[in-house]
Image (cartoon, rainbow, N blue to C red):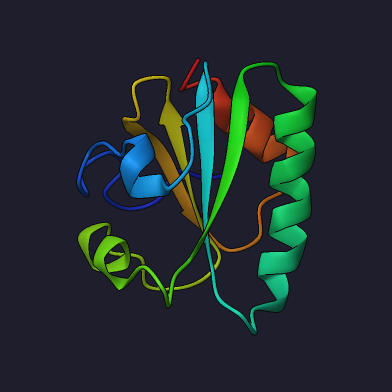
Length: 112
């Protein structure tokens, strides 16, 4: 998972109220998806698997169409977009497109 443009500078931090879910104890994988996005389904599986494998990591999926406020604030221009948050909710990595499991695990290194 390559870090993308504007790493950490689009809103900087997300909290549980904005996400509609609790943050992970160590990190949170936030996925912006849309209804007809094929790569979003595969990304959901990858992120859910990583969250199960790594203690203290949560996976939160956000419907981009339903959360246009966050999409605009965070400059999400395509789905899937994945944000890696540290324990405090700071955005430490972001990437667009379908990630590989190994890349997601490597990106978590910046968060934990």
